[in-house]
Image (cartoon, rainbow, N blue to C red; front, side, top):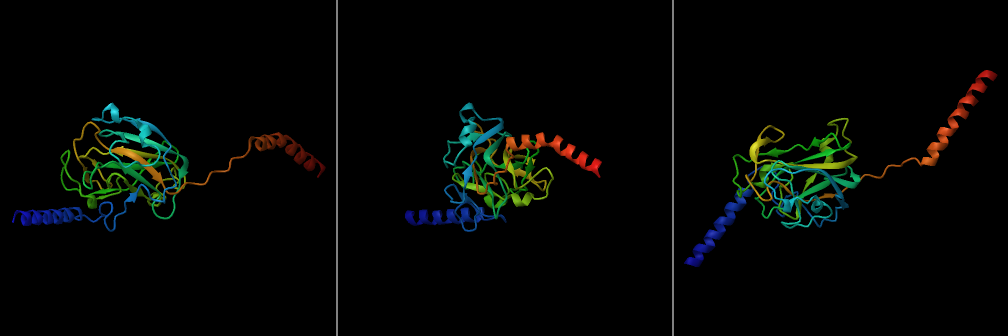
Amino acid sequence: MVSRLCSSLLVLTAFSFTARTQAGPFDPAAGQPGSHAVHMASIDFQGWATGWKDYVVGADVTGAWQTPEKALGPAVGTSFDIVGLGNGGSIVLTFDRPITDGPGWDFAVFENSFSDTFLELAYVEVSTNGNDYFRFPNQSLTPSPVSAFGAVDPTNIDGLAGKYRQGWGTPFDLNVLTGISPLLDVNWIPFVRIVDIIGDGSFLDSFGRPIYDPHRTVGSGGFDLDAIGVRYFAATQAVPEPASACLLLASLPLIRLWRRRRKTAA
């Protein structure tokens, strides 16, 4: 009888978990039917972040987690090979070649969540010039505050990094930012900024709704960045050779003299 009771409780627990994680309107956790999560071993990845700048350390993250280089290269998919942003912190990752817009998603951001519901979230912003950043539209429908180790339903989250467990990236499509500003060229994105969201409701989604995630986490508080993988890189730009440029400049006086003589002769 005890065995039958335990089996019944397990079935009930599984049913409750499935119902809870399928409650919202957006795609479900990694590995479930309809999920948009991208696995770190996907053959779609053509490269990874190679540099960083502007690391702003937020609150509640110890020095052991403040190594930006751990966010470079391929995703590792563990709890330890990360850089912690801290609560409210941020970092910019750079690439050997700029990211460009292509069919479907263009790059993916990896966090180190140990489960499908312990989700520490972050805004994702991109820039063409390294000064002006533009944020991906996002939505959070989590109805109430979440404790430090509480659960977030991934089907209530859209457009925020950290939606999936470790080893699975949140994809972003540059096409949704087309035409947002003349300062942004979606076909030339050398900079991606990740901004941790303090999950107490003081940070808002694109519709002005409060964003809740596990709060307040300490030690490695806030978003823990594993990697950023790129699906499409821009083609390299052709740069005029210095010798050609010098030759053109040297010939300008001769061109002007030739034009002046033709005018006098006429």
